[in-house]
Picture (cartoon, rainbow, N blue to C red):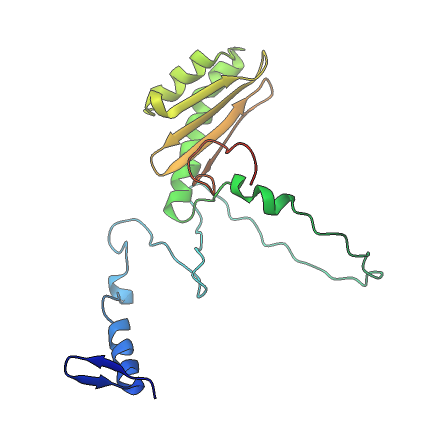
Length: 194
């Protein structure tokens, strides 16, 4: 039997198990005192495996769950050697936003697109104009990166509080996305490889 020595004697496994059960209950919240109750902010729900669960954001229509039909298929193709691209470039993955942060990100994307649309419609693809619009939304100038990519394309990255915004403005559209940063940290896409 495994024991742990204390100043007052030894604790056996049954006593340690009882202490663990008691300690596990400390500091937990019950359903009636859940995080976000009464604040108007939904709590960040998680699955039994601890993965975050997203909820519909204001103005968002839930996408229907696709139905999968299985049909008999011919024999599986021969196995290919492992592709190490994903393994070697995983540090370049954008981390997703979840819960209320995801909703905040969707709202920020809409504000950015609305601010940049007049520039696109006026064929103004200059970094200075783009930077002025983004800082006009309240983002600090030192956290806004803008670059010209040719004559009619501007790329931008904003290190906003709690999220990253990135996108491009081209003659056909203004694209933007919100994410939680890159796997190696920060809002700028990492360079190089591992």
